[in-house]
Image (cartoon, rainbow, N blue to C red; front, top):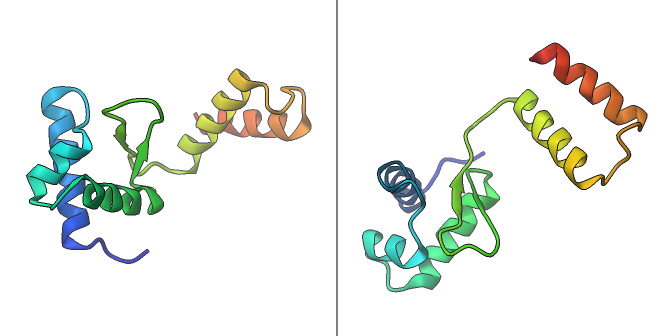
Amino acid sequence: MTALTPKMAKCLKFIGAYALEHGYSPNLQEIAAHMGLAGRSSAIRIVDELQERGLVRRLPKFARNIEIIEQQGADFHLKRILDAVSVTGFIGLTDPIISEAQAYAGRAA
């Protein structure tokens, strides 16, 4: 992965600091204002780039929808996938792949 541009790094730092102080993420207008950007569309572009790099996630249907993704290991992400499968039922919980993943996650915990 290539290094972050100065604007991306500044945006990521602002999102994290704002969320820590307020308990929720800034909206796109606040990001644009903080960074001195011409408008919301410039903030969208930077946040989209951060999302493509896996550093943030935008949650649908929320105004303050930017979540910083902590850099976690494979075990963390495997647990998130298993949780999603158990909630959605996308794959049967008796599927051999799920059984193997659950056994691995149990060993990793």
